[in-house]
Image (cartoon, rainbow, N blue to C red; front, side, top):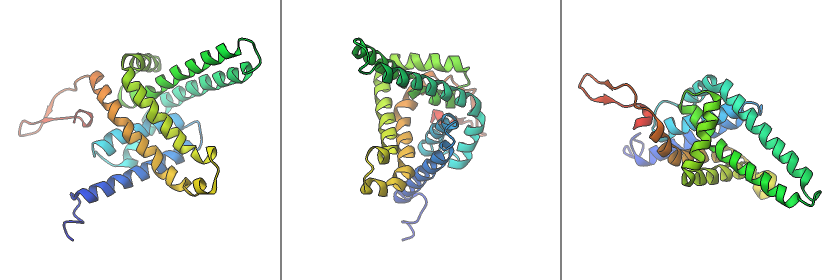
Length: 229
């Protein structure tokens, strides 16, 4: 019994991970309620998923709040840009739909543009959480990664769309059964999706992360940054 409740026990570690995912999801949902804060909340969501959930460093709330404050201004601006672009594409889409002989072609163009923007967005907030870049550089680097690492991009977009679908599932299927699952959906979908997101994203970000200045312990062992582990 003592071994079962030991913090290093595999079962306890798994339960701790599940709790952290649920706690992170709830924080994320609450911080997204004002809508304008979605960008900063998403940046923090990824940062915590990579540092706390994957690497076991620090605590969910501590790192979420730190990242939220640090990246609030650029993340909000990036979010506003994406929201404006998607809004404009949707507006044009509704206008040309069944109202023009070239509507079919234009719809295809708008859908293609929306997919490209979605691919860029799948990188932007993660890049912001890791690198110190100007906003223009973040967009440029995200666009580069979206096409240079297309296999990664496909995986990221699938996870992103699955997470968004999961969150809005009650609106898509307003049945009593689905509605009863709303608390569980909100408590686990964002954190689980973000945790899965870190696997392809961290593999890619490591390729572009510059080596940090070496630091060593008193015994001469090199101290690695959390993202280098």
